[in-house]
Amino acid sequence: MAKLILTLDGSYLNEYTLSRPQTTIGRKSTNDIHLDNLAISGDHAVILKHGNDFFLEDLNSTNGTRLNNAAVRKQLLKNEDVIELGRFSLTFLDDATSNATVAFEKTMMVHPSVFSTKSHNSFSHSEQIKTSTSTAPNVATSHSSKMQSNEDHAKPTFIGKIQVLNGTSSGRELVLNKALTTLGKTGVQVAVITKRPDGYFITHVEGNILPVVNGVSTGVQARALADHDVIELAGVKMEFYLSNA
Picture 1: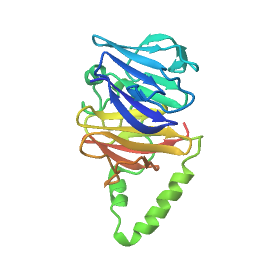
Picture 2 (picture 1 turned 135 degrees about the horizontal axis):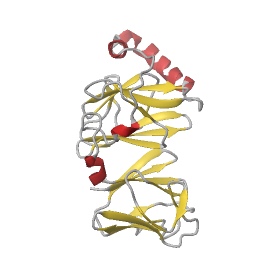
Picture 3 (picture 1 turned 120 degrees about the vertical axis):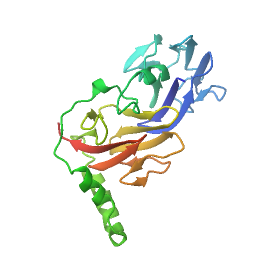
Picture 4 (picture 1 turned 90 degrees about the horizontal axis):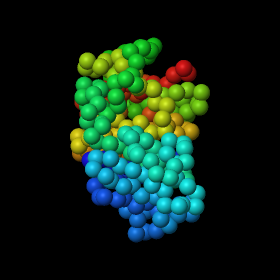
């Protein structure tokens, strides 16, 4: 089922399934997607479903509707298109397209063409797991170091990447250059990695099992990612790291 993922300034807020012939968006509380903000018109835009296709239509809103940074009146939506209304963003995920793509051993929603096989100089998988299973007396120090690490790596000159650590796709990379990157398998486990001015954050979106970072569940709130964190999602282990290239 196609859906929209709502974010505000890169922070995950909610998701909406596009199961109706039309899904309305606006400041009025009667809208299917209610955005209570003065930059949003009462009846701002609508998503129209025609067969397997979805169209975005602006309803003569005051501030307009943008799709992938371009103003639009009516436009066919494609998988991972980003609708922008003021500071809000709605990422369109077409389940039919997502299920047709194959990557991360058929578990990830990212198409394999976006990956490269270039490796990087980082901790080995065994070293990372060893680090994440340190003894209890060092937890406070580790937590303090992690917080400092997050601050150190929040510099805008660095770009986040993830590299697959297991399976047939091991070694492949994905550059996290979008504001929102969705990973996982629809109906099983889905998470989003958001790129913010203060760093990268992973948030649980769908599934009974929460993402795991360094062997610990992320919880339901957004979790900051630090350099060389190991993410486990839908049976796939990935290392998050920061690069200046």
